[in-house]
Structure formats: C-alpha cells, structure tokens
Length: 271
Image 1 (cartoon, helix red, strand yellow):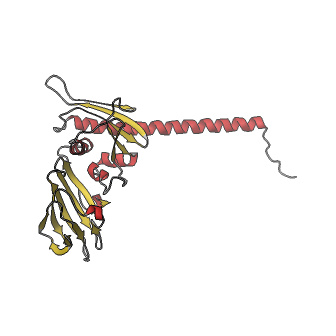
Image 2 (cartoon, one colour; image 1 turned 45 degrees about the horizontal axis):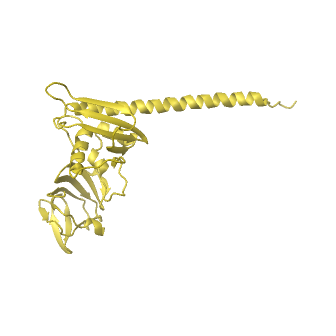
Image 3 (cartoon, helix red, strand yellow; image 1 turned 135 degrees about the horizontal axis):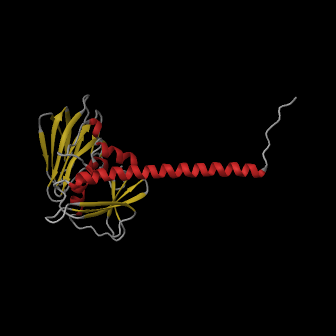
C-alpha cells in the first residue's frame, strides 16, 4: 500500500500562509520595539550622567540617528531656580540642528565605555566612514566656533562617570591617516590623542595629510620612528618630543621591528 500524500485545499494553504505572515509580523514588531527600548534606555543613561556634568552649561538641541531611526534630545542646564532637564523622544528635531549618525553596536560600545566617542568619530577625510559621525540638518547654519564646541560636547555627553576616563592603547584605536589613533580630547584650538604605529606603517603619506595650519607636538613614549619633516628624515626615539610648526610637511614612518607609540598635541588657531 502506497503512503498517501497530504493534500491541502487552496483555502487551507492560504490560511496557513496568513498565520505564518501574522507570526512574522508580530515577531518583527517585537524585535523593533525591543531595539527601540534598548536605544532609549542607553540614551537615557547618557542623559542621566550628563545632567550632573560640570561642563553642561548651555542649551543643546540635537538629533541622534541610530540605524536610520532619528531621536531628538533637548537639554537645558540647571539654573538657580530649576534643575537640569533632558528630554529624549523619537523623531526629528523641530528646528534645524546637528545630529549624530551611528548604529546600535557602536551605541552599546559607547555605553560600556569600550570606545571613546571622539575616537569613534575620527577620520582622515570628510568622505571617510566613522561609526559615530556628525551631520547637519538642512537649514542649519553653524557658527565658526561650532566644530570645537560640538566636539567638546560630544566628549562630555557620551563619556560617562566622574572623572571622565579615556582608556587608550593599541586596542582602543581606529585607523586614520595611515596610523592607529585614539582621541583624548578636542576643544577649540586644541586636539589631543594617542598614536600607534605598527612596523611598516607610514602616517601622513597622503599629500593632503602632510601639513596643518596649526602647530603640533609629538611625544614618543615607546619605540622609535623616522620623522620626515620637509622631506628630511630624522630618527626620534622614545623619551623625546618634537615640534612641528604650522605649514611644515610631516610624515611619521616606522621602518623598525618594534611598534611605536606616541602622544599627539595639536594646538593654536584652526586646531
């Protein structure tokens, strides 16, 4: 006797398909809602911490786009008459302003303190990818001081705790300008960071990376490098610092067997 195959009517098949679609729809809805709750919880933790930050001294209204979904944040610092207030809601800011572009994975890393927000945003050129980027809404007209102010704000909003601790070292870097780097702090007229050069790496090899309109100081803390300044090579060993004036071409090479580590200070008008 041959086994009988199950045969469903067209109506029965459609019922089964409808049930499957309903299950998929609710599963997707649950996942979306869970992700939104996770994002909001993380943003609320940043807000709670920032409320007590001594650098929270001015109103801020901005957006955070996480995986293509926009959230708006309005922050009002404390006064003699009222405590600080920060509201977080899903949606686009009501007035043109700046906004961050990121993803949930990066947001979780920032939340855990595994990634410095300025390191997450570092890139050699504006067209490069960064896991935490800053964009401007249509109609937003930033002032001349905007870049320095927003980078300092970025650090304080996304860095939790007192004191605000910045881990650094090889495993806390991202690739930029041909080297590995992590950022300490940016403000108007000041940029500070940590650099790591693997053997064979060549920083600032790209023609557009070779000069700055401001001064720099490189403090070598491990290994040695060849500093190519205005096309002249100098060997610099750990325990020494060297100054780079505005406009001087500078490339940092590591043709040696040991990794090199350094602290980078950039300062002056335009930094």
